[in-house]
Length: 343
Image (cartoon, rainbow, N blue to C red):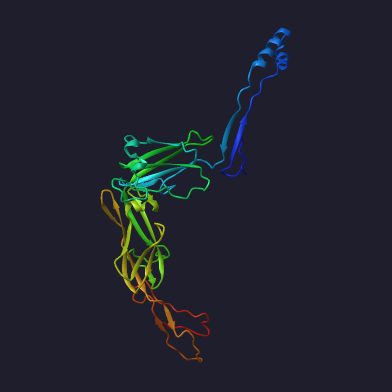
């Protein structure tokens, strides 16, 4: 028998399949095998005394494909932080999935990572003596995700490892094979996302921002192989971003990558980040120099002039005090035949 699950079935639905078997009729056996009267009577007598087999029931539950998530999923590059464990979570399974660590290169595999027992994980109590913090798996699983299984993997050496997860009791489920690298951080890069610095020329030229506005800060952490380390792992690297000037305020949001720079006062300052590599080695980012100027304005806003009459405009605020060539004030007229502007 072949059991087919329709595509429109509701996930989480449970169905029971009942299988029953009946004894064959004596006359059918006699005709099928050409038995004489004596043989037919013997068969009928035997069948009358036989009990039919007991029925069997199979319970099936509709679920999504079995999958595995981890911190930074689906990124395959994770930081080498032996004082942290990484949570690998199997979802949409039967609860009987198993995780296996396979060597990829000579000397790899089991030597790169080790499994940590769940009883040794802090689990919301970081002050418990002897426990190890664990980064949670990224992404929210579906509400009807079935049984979940958790494994805690701690990197113990630099390198690459293959992790194989399989739920043998899941009918039709395929095993998950993931190659993960564990390397220390090698570079931290900071940049203001909404500032176009392509035309600034020198890399030392500071971006110009207006007082009273917030600008999203782009933070990227790379490992020593120049692979991006996901933001959900920055907690283990203890990422810090600070400003050396009170006029620039660094604000952190709910998500690790939600970092903004608020221009509190006119002036100039620097923003810099750092992470901690194991063991307790500091890695600094580039120094992002930012110049803050007052909001730009021109006074007066409205003019009524006679033909041939001139009037001097007053420029307020703006980046007039910036480095030479990095900013300038330009004037233009929408109707040069009526009004011309002379700088």
